[in-house]
Amino acid sequence: MRVLENLVVYVIERLRQEAKEELKVLGVDLKVPRKPFKRLSYEEAVEIAKSRGIDISYGEDLGTEAEAKIGEAMAEEGYDAYFITLYPWEIKPFYIMKAKGGLSFSFDLDYKGLELASGGQREHRYEELVKNIKDKGLNPKSFVFYTEAFKYGMPPHGGFGLGIDRLLMKVLGMKNIREVVLFPRDRQRLVP
Image (cartoon, rainbow, N blue to C red; front, side, top):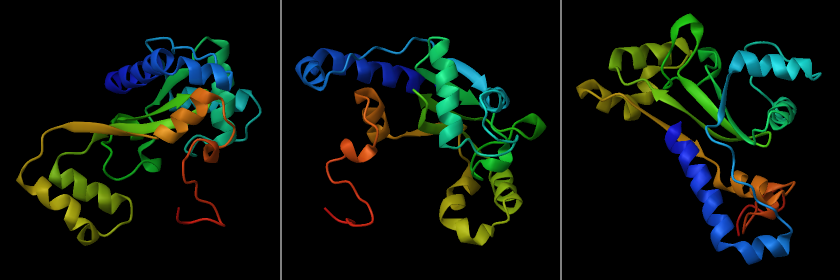
């Protein structure tokens, strides 16, 4: 999470330095997010969404409207960027490590009410990984391509996936991701 936090801050700082003219033309007053990014649990995020009129129950994925409402609440506290942690394991992929109490060692990074990245600690123990696959109702034989290397030992590890187009959209204040993608895809356009 620290790596991701530093990466986002670095990108925004570099944009401010190297794209001053472009930001000026676009009318963007880009602010560097406050560090450290706030961390709130999934449970806290659900409560915030509920308190702002979103019909959501614990265990549901945070949808677009819920993310937007949580973003409003975080902005009121002075946070553009924040992490949502400790999601229920049931709503996470099989490769995310379980934590106590049905939770997971996972997180999302949201920025101005939109999820930019998901990540977490990966399950590195072969037997636990196979059990997780089964617990998700999947066939371990379908995932041999993934699990084979784990048989021989895998160090503890984690990671994240960052949506750079989503980051650019939010940094520039655009309403639609198609405004920041060189060759956007939609129902009418599948190839450049």
